[in-house]
Structures are given as C-alpha cells and as structure tokens.
Image (cartoon, rainbow, N blue to C red; front, top):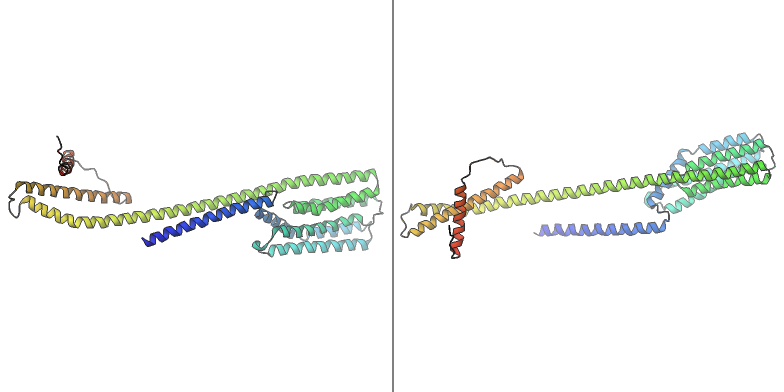
Length: 362
C-alpha cells in the first residue's frame, strides 16, 4: 500500500509540474507576442537570422569578386587610386560582416541574444551597403553616359543580390540596399539631366518592387517555419499520447495480473475449507457413520452439500471468466439441463427465504 501511495504521489507531483510548465510557457508566449509586434516568435527570429548568416557564409566570395569585376570595368573612366581605395573599403566591410556571421554561428543558441545579434549584423550590412554605394561617387565630374549606365547596372545587380541573401530578415534588406539606391538617386540628381532623372526614378521603382517581392518571400519563409513548428508540436503530442497510452496499458496489465493473482489466492483459500465441508456433508448425507436420529439433519446435510457444490461451481466459473479475459480458455458447446439449473436456484432461494421466515409458493 505504501508503494502504491508513493507512486500516486509521484504521478500527482509530475502532473503538477507539467501544469506549471504549460502555464509558464503560455505566459512566456504572451510576453513574446507583446514584445515582438510582428507576432514572430523568438525561435523564428533566430532561424531567420541563421538563414541569412548561412547564405552570407556560403557566398562569402561572391560580392567581393563582383567588386573586383566592377573595379576592373570602371578603370576605363575612373582614377585607379580611387578604385583601389573603394575596393579596400568594400573588402574591409565584407570582412566585418563575415566575422560577425561566423561568431553568430559559433555562439550556442541558448546564449545567443537574437535582437542584439540582429542589430550588430544589420549595422555591418549597412556599412557594407554604404561602401558599395561609394562607387557612385568616384569621379563625379564624369559626364559619359556609358559610365553612369555602368554604375546604374552594377549597383542594381548588387542590390538584387543583397536582397536575395537577406530576404529572411527585412531590416537587413533595408540596411544593405537603401544606401545604394540613395547613392544612385543623388548621383543622377547632381547631373540634372532628364535622362538621368528617369534612371533615378527607375532605380527607386525597381527598389520598391524588389522590396515587395522580398516581403512576399519573407512571409513564405515564416509560414514554412510555422508549419514546421506545428508539425514538430504535433509529433511531440503524438509521442506524449503514445507514452500515456503505453503507461495506461502497463497499468492495465499490472491490474489484470493482480486480479489473476487475487483470484488464484482466493480460489485456494476457499477451496481448502470448502472441500472439507463437502466431504463432511457427504458423509452426513449418506449416513456413513450411522443413521440420524432426526431426519431433518439428513435434509440439512443435503442442503449443505448442494450449497457447497454450488459455491464450488461459482468459483470455477469465476476462474473460467478470468481465463477467457486472458485469452487462454477454449469454449465448447455442451448440453445443459435447464431443469437442474432452475432447481438449484430454487433451492438457494428457499434457504434464504427460510432464514427470514418466508415461504416460497410454487
């Protein structure tokens, strides 16, 4: 009994702890929704930032290589010294961004504060975008349309690449691409020519269109993460339900085993005195030790013997039911004497009625 009580106490304590954890989780989720106005959970923020970091590291040499190509193309109209200075700033900014990304990858998730890391990487991306925007101001006195078209095309290519890399984190998209678009507009505005005003307007329109595309892509990625989280939660619930079902099955098997042991013990405890009662009642009913002085004694002995036999049959039937439940009993059809069953029931009812001073009317 003490073991059962302790087990019940442990289960109750476990249920209480589980309830407290669920309540704490609900409060935490409510606070997260208030903190993050977008409704995105912190684990999603971490995953989205991790996607950007992995994209950046997987293409670490892409934009520096593009910067070299742009510098080589700009040598036809720009001073080499300015190009080398611009190229050096691009490499430095890229190095800072890559270093932060590698540090974020190495940091344990439980120690990584996502808002702080996002702010650091956004600042590094902004600096990187500013360095790329600097190419628009190399030799601003150049009036060749080819040079300005080259600047326009180069920066639009870089803008599209940076947006694709950072589409999972929209603040990084804005920080990395707005400086380049603003640089195009300022550079063409300084030229004060309708053709360049049209190109500046085109740059703004393309940037807005790209932002709209990236917002849709970002929403798709967030929805994908939400679906994955729901799937993981469903799998966890199924695993929990499976464990609960398994525990219930084990408890049912233990209860069934305890019942079988109880029935076996009770059968033995009942059969031992019952066999003695049946034996002595059979001797008295048969008058083996001599005739009774009172004929009623013989009738009583017969009733005792038949009642004991009936009780023995009940015990056997209870054991048979236990075997049937365990699936270890084969049923066979046998003829039944209905009159004997009715007579047996009548005799038992008559004994109870006589004990209460009643008489059964047939």
